[in-house]
Image: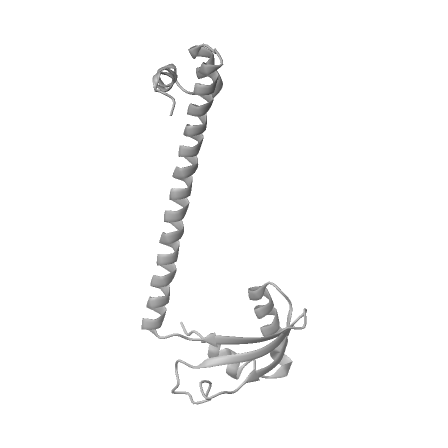
Length: 151
């Protein structure tokens, strides 16, 4: 099976203004806003030589808000791609740690709130069974909490 590289397709197939609609539709979907391509730019990092396998394509576009956008399409080497994938994995791991820590902190906060309510209810004269029913704590937990000196 043969694959067409996207950077090559932009440079060779979609360079013609008649094909800008295809490219505009694709970029608009990626960015989540409508864009109008002004031009595909040539630069030192964007030579037309076939042997440059890691070329870049720069596209000058305008958003519906009138902003000029410089869009760069890159084809990274295997090593650069691996580094980027590792970066994404690290970010996902970091997000997971934060999410887990947040969930644990929220759970601890709810437990503390239940303990505080149990102590306040005991001080107000409520019996232990009623406190357990209202807070959702077990009778044993209520007994332990209400025996602990208030700090």
